[in-house]
Structures are given as C-alpha cells and as structure tokens.
Length: 194
Image (cartoon, rainbow, N blue to C red; front, side, top):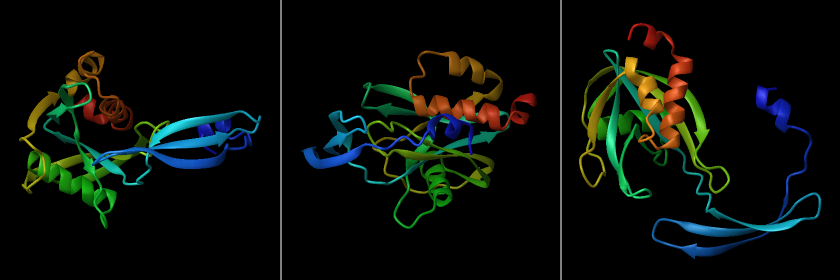
C-alpha cells in the first residue's frame, strides 16, 4: 500500500453515477454534466471535460548542467509561458515513443537515455489529463516536423538556478512546477554537479 492509499483507502463507497449528458461541444472540447449520488444520499451535478482517455507526455531534457525548456504561448492566461516539451500520445504510441517524438518536434533533439519520472493528473476534478513525465539525457540533434503554429523558443536554464525558477511567480504552469520539483527529488545528483 502506498503512503497516500493509507489515507484514501477507507472503504469509502464511490458515488453512484445517475446520468451523464453532453452540456456543450466545441471543435476540441466536449463538456459533460455528470449527476452523482453520494453514499450519504446527497446528489450533485458536476461538469467535466469528456474523458477522452488520451494521455500526454512531458519531457525534461538535461544537457551540460542545464534544463532545456520552451517558451510557448498559452491561450488560457493569454501570455507566453516557460514550460517543458510536451504533447499528446498518438494512437499506437507508447509514452516513451511519444516523449521521443515530441522532443524531436519541439526542440530538434533526440535522447539516447529517457527515464520515466512519474505519471501525473493535471486536473483530476474536471478531466482525465494523465501526463507521463520523463527526463531526457545524452542528447543529439534530430529534427522532426511538428504541428506548432509558431516555432517554440528553447530556453536553457542552469540547474543551479532551478530553485529561483520554481520560486518565480511568473512561472504559472502547475504541471511544469510539479515536473521541476520531481526532477529535484528524483535526480539530486544532477544538482550536485551544477
């Protein structure tokens, strides 16, 4: 049993799904209303993005004591964000294959070593949003054509400055913050050399 399961697995009965219906649909998203009845009898309607079950990847390429990030426009906050290489897993791809492809498409690099860090849910209250996070090392030039509307700008961040980056309130992407903290926790040896 994991640490969290000790707290979460209390034999609590999951809510009963009474109905699921489409509330809105766009070219990209579908919003569902989900009617639930909880074990205590309370009923609520929740909204969620339709669970497409299409997971994604995030890649943290590390080279010469630097983390290679990208500057990318984020339409949610309507600003450019510093983030990591990321993208959806295509049909028939494994998370590792998708990570290798996205790395080549977004910053023109291939990795000889790709290490899984962890899988995260970006917003589990409102959507499926599973993201597999990887560290990429032993990099070499290798470009694939991507689908970005404009070229992504690579930004090299010295690993020695990662705490300052994490503390900077201008970095607003929670997935990126989580990935950076995982990198620090899971690979401390990278920071000893930095």
